[in-house]
Length: 64
Image (cartoon, rainbow, N blue to C red; front, side, top):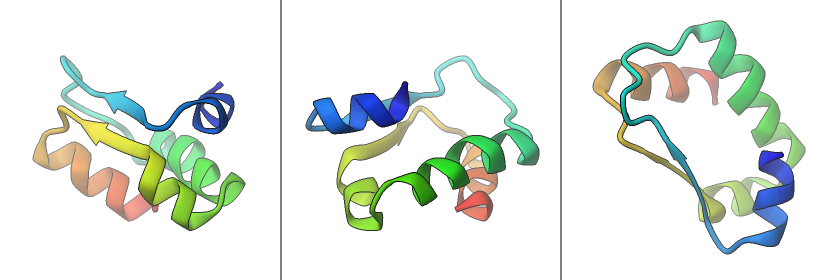
């Protein structure tokens, strides 16, 4: 679904409001595979992570 949204929208916001923890395995399966499925430039321009705490930011960065 996220890949479809990336292709049909200017920007996709992945909102983590109310989320306190994201596991490494979730981030790897979701965000690493998403990055591999679309061009890196498209990923950087169209995907935005919002309302992330420091822990979630570190987990996402390590997955990417």
